[in-house]
Image (cartoon, rainbow, N blue to C red):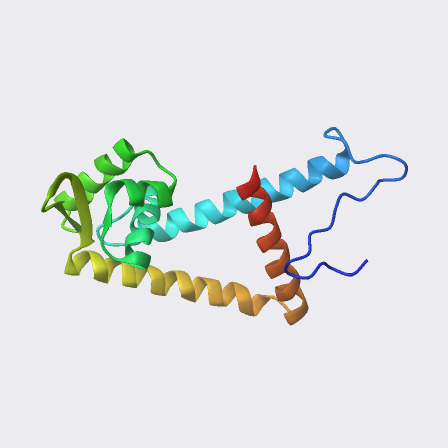
Length: 166
């Protein structure tokens, strides 16, 4: 079977006369492999986040990624993009403000809205973090053959779509 193109999604394939079941060994191996990959990514990102000075948690880095990607944002926008609740984002942002990484400013005309922006220190911190992350990603990329890169890219995209659909 040829791999699907980027926009094609193969349907389930029968395993003999039946569809795979949740108690099948192949299914268990698949879920263990996916969980192992996701855990390794979290651990790696956490170690990388902890290398910043001041040290940031993985959750803080995830929150700050949206700011680095989109510029000044409201708290609820940042929370949604980081996959945390607004109260959780607010607590993290208060700490990041105390550490001199972000500023929190009430929006003129709408006192309920707080806009978040990087300080110079915070922008430098995220730039350094992203540089280290890209270096690690480049090392991983170089470890794979061009064929493995293509397969990994396609499978990662498809798994991301499936996870988002759940």
